Length: 418
Ligand code: DGY
Image (cartoon, rainbow, N blue to C red; front, top):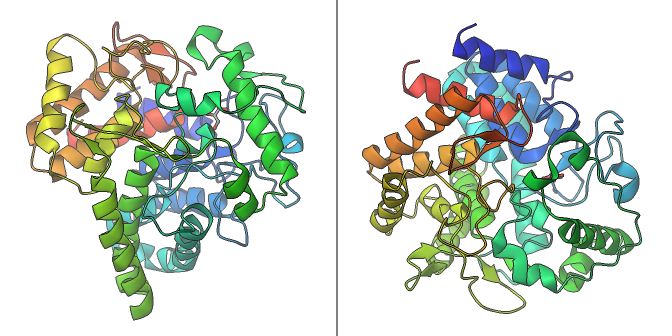
C-alpha cells in the first residue's frame, strides 16, 4: 500500500458511520477538534464523507450553541469518563465542555476545496457556527475582555500541559465519582497524564455536573480558569474563517459583529506576547499573571494571523531543529517540566504542527513552514501514524493508527506532491 492508501485506510477503519473515532478503543467516540481535522483529511478524497463528519459532530450541539468535546454516538466501556459521569440528558449524549474551535475553519476549508458543489452543505451548517461563536462569547467571555476562558484542561485539548500545573493545583483532588481509568489499559501509563491530574479533572466534572452544566454557574464557580493562548488563537482564526462564510451566507449585521470581534481579539491576543520569554503565553485568570511556560500553543497566534513575532518564533523552532530535536515539542525542551514521552508535556503532535506551518507560511516564512511540514512527514514516515511522537528519539507513542495523524499526513502529502 502506498502511504496515501495507508492513511486513507486508517480513516476508513476508524469510520463508525459518518463519524471517525480518533483511534480504536482508547477513544471510542467522536471528538470535537479531532473531527475538524479529520474532515479536512477526508476532503482530500471524499467530499461527501468530509461534510458528514462535521454534520455528525453538530448532532451533539446544544441549544445554547456549545459544540461539546465528545459526542457519545454509541455506547462503549473502553473510555472513562463515559456519559453516566457527565450526566447530561440529551440524545445523542455528550460531554459538557468545549474543545478548541477548529470547526468553522474546517467548514471553510471544505467549501473552498469543493467549490460550488459544497455551497448547500456549507449554507446549512453556517447558522450553527454563528450560534457556536456566540456561545464562546457569552459563556466564556461574559465581560467581553476579548479572551475566552477555559474552565477544564480537557477543553484545551492539551490536557496535562505544564502550563496548567499551577492553576490546576487550586482544584481539589477529591472526587464524588469513582475514577476507573481505561486509558492506561490501552497505552503505557508513562505516556499518559498522572493520577493526581485525573483526580482534579474529575473533580471539575463533578462540580460542573452539580452546577447543572449551567454556563454562568460554571464560569462563576470553577477553581480553574485560564485564557489558553491555543484556544484563543484557534478561535480568532475560526472567526476570520466564519467572516468569510458570513460574507457569503450571512447578514450584514452578522458580518459586522464578527468583524468587530476579530478587531478586538487581535489586539487582546497580541497582549499575550511575553517579551522576557519571547513567546506567546496563556494567562491564569485567577492568579492574574501570564503563565511562564513556553508550549507549542504559544506558536499558534501565527495561525490566527498575528505575524509580528514570526521571526522570533521561527528562530526558536530552527534552534531546536539544529539541536536534533524533532519539531514541534509541545513543551519547551529546556523547561524543567519537559517530559518527552508524556502526552502534552513534550511530545510532538501532527495537528499542532500543521497549524504552526500554516501560520508560518502565511507570515511569509516558507522555509520554516517547510521545515515543520517535512519534520512531520519524517516522523510519521519513520514511526507510523501514531497519536504523538517523542521529540528526542522520534518514537511513535500513545495510540496507533490515529485518525488525525492520518488526516494531516494526507494534507501534507498533497502539499509535497506525494
Ligand atoms: C482524554 O480522555 O485523554 C482526552 O484527551 C479528553 O478529551
